[in-house]
Structure formats: C-alpha cells, structure tokens
Amino acid sequence: MVQPRQCHAEIKQALRSDRSYEKAIEFKPDYHEAWTNRGNTLANLERFGEAIDSYDKAIGIKADYSEAWYNKAFALRKSGQNTAAIAAYDKALEHKPDMHQAWYNRGVALADEKLYPEAIASYDKTLQLRQNASEVWNKRGTAQAQIGQFEAAIDSWDKALAIEPNDSETWYNRGLGLANLKRFYEAITSWDKTVELQPDNIEAWYNRAVALKKIKRFAEAIDSFDRIIALEPNDPNLYYQKAGAYALEAQAASGNNCPESLETNTSNAIENLERAIELNPKKYLKMCQNDSKLHTLREDVRFLALFQGKQ
Image 1 (spheres, rainbow, N blue to C red):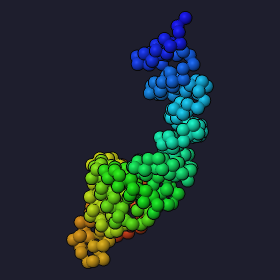
Image 2: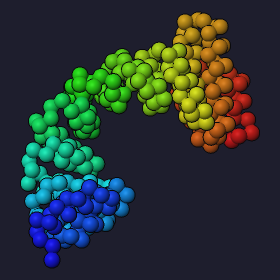
Image 3: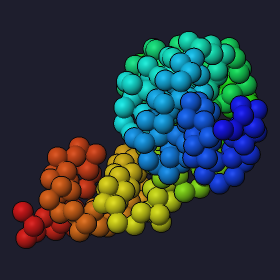
Image 4: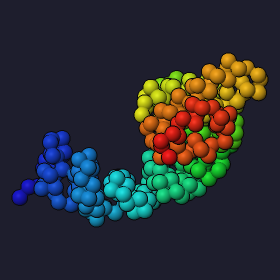
C-alpha cells in the first residue's frame, strides 16, 4: 500500500503531466483540486455538463472551495443556466468575499438577466476591490444606461476611458449615452474616436450618420453611410437612409433657392431609393409612399417612376 507521504508526492507529479487530474483522482479519489482541474479541462473543451459534475465532486469533498464554486458558475453560464450561476457565484463569495472576479462575473450574469440594479451593486463591489478595472466601469455604465441613468453611465464610461483611453467599445457606449440625452455633438465626437480605433465598426458609423442628420450636417452623414456601404453593400436600409439625407439636403436647397443643389441632391436621393427598392421592393416601396422626409421629391417624374409596374 502506498504511504500517504508518497501518495501526495505522486499526486503532485501527476498534476504536472498531461491529463493530470485523471492520475491524481486515481491515486486519491477525494482530492478536490484534481476534480476541479478535471472540470477546468472539460470546460475548456466546452463539455460544460461534465465540467459541472466534476466541480460538484470537488465541492462535495470541500464545500468551502471557492475556486470550484467560481468555475462551476462559469460552466453554468456557458450552458445557459444563469440563475444557477448567480447562486454559485454567491457561494464562492460566501467563502471568499474578496474574489473580485466573482463579483464582476456575478454582475455580468445579473445584467444578462436584466437585473440591472443588482448588477450595478456587484460591479460596485468589484470596484471596491479593484478600482482601476476599466472593463468593470464600462459594464457598470452599460447597466446604468439600461435603467435610464445616462448621466451616471457617462461618468462610469469616462472613468473607464481615464484608465484605458483606447477602448473602442467604451467610446461607442459613451456615444449612445450622449445621444440618448440628445447631446449629439458630443456623441459624434465619441463615435469619431470609436471609428478611429475600429474603422470597421458598422454600428458606430451608422449611429454617427443618424446623429449628423439630426444636426443637419447632411454631407457628413452621407459620407458615414458610404463608409458602411463599402462594408455592407447589399443592405437596403443604408441606401434608404442615405437617400433621406440627400432629400433633406434637397429640401434645404429648395428653401434657399439653389436650383442646382436641388437638382443634384434630388437625383442622388432617387438613385439611392432605387437601389433600396431593388434590394427589397415590398418594404421600401411602402416606406417611400409614407415618408414625410421625401415630400420634396414627390412631384419629380423620376420619383413617380419608381412605382411604375411595382405596386
């Protein structure tokens, strides 16, 4: 029979080798760290049900083993069991209250369940333990925005950016918060930073274009739509939105008695409407009929021709 001291040494050696958990469990079936390592390996293979079973074995041996509770929570989240994951994070924190990763991921799980005030409270606990965690400030801001606390959310995002100024996601979220407060100039500045850091961020280009339309900077809005069309050339909504910007430019030209600009923008608007209708006739023919932004175009024979034979 192997002596306990020798057994412990062989377990330590097994933990350094491939599939070490199997060897360790063979030597000592009640070795909780081996069961946890087995769970970790299975989780890395996305075999989450088996991983959870292994973590349960570890917890059955050592009920206060916070690492097993934490890793079990991860596997539960990955398998879509968010409520059970939150309970597992609670157990991990019961045994190790200063585990900042557990507070953070608990917050993420709560936010996934739309329990935003509870998520914010978890992020606050994380920040008490790890104040300079930019990703936590970002998530906190997102949760605050979800319950309409946009000023507080912007403050959280500003704190995140003070720590990590090149995080394109935070700049993007900050833009959304500012737009919700109708602070469009500042929102555009945030999205400018987003696309500087991430030039293929379609959502940032799109929201930037919409905000530019709202403040009547139509040429810049059109340029933003063109940036997205280069990435998504078969999205009819982009052509429709771009047509709307040209139509608003045409409306401004009509009011300012600029016939040349009126003609150019009308032609461009109709050309883009034609492309939108070509890609999705049913939806965009109906929208063209009902969209008040297009009233400047309605008497133009080219606009009327869009409907011929397509009703």
